[in-house]
Figure 1 (tube, rainbow, N blue to C red):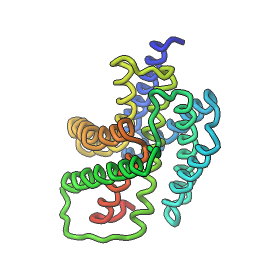
Figure 2: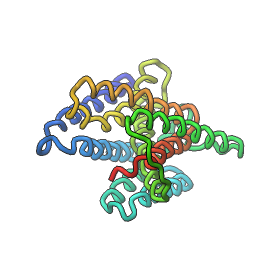
Figure 3: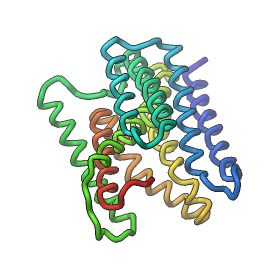
Figure 4: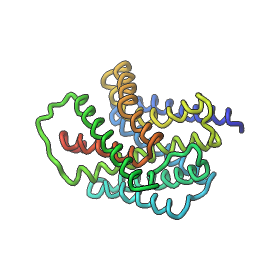
Length: 270
């Protein structure tokens, strides 16, 4: 298949995902749990993509396999004493996604995403400071947009532990792996506006969409679309920019900080 055909394949896959997104509104009794179901759908989609990439490119180097195992273990730790099913589901998906991402980026090095800039202590520090600063700013924005009273604040170890899941799982299995899919199908070439737009779109929109089904159901189409645009611009795009322009680790740190800040003011969502 040509690169042009492969670009169409990416959009066909997204079209199928959008079909599932719409059909999900009519699944289940009283349309409840629509958002939760889409999280499962995207997780399964990520796993399928990861397997395809691993079959195509093979396993990464031993060091990257070790990093993948550590990332999966960290995600599993987030769900200790919370949910055995979630622990198994997210850690397995994280493991396969991480292996697939590292394997694909080893094959296509020119346009790959860097996991962490480790050329020097300064480069590591820059990544950490960039992620921390972005997370603090986005975390404050998230609080202001919540519309809730900020009249309580607490810090618990559980908040940091559970934040490992969105920080690692979502950034690796729901963002980086879809960029890796685009890079693989496009044979490493991001030399046209259409290809670059496709890669950015797939890094942002699928992950944003799964946050919104209950908003569509409870508030209607227009508020749902407004929320998609808002989430994409205020959170999806900044995290994607961090991954693309700095490294994946900085995006993970920023994402984790956003969730920790929310937990400290509003508590855990379950």
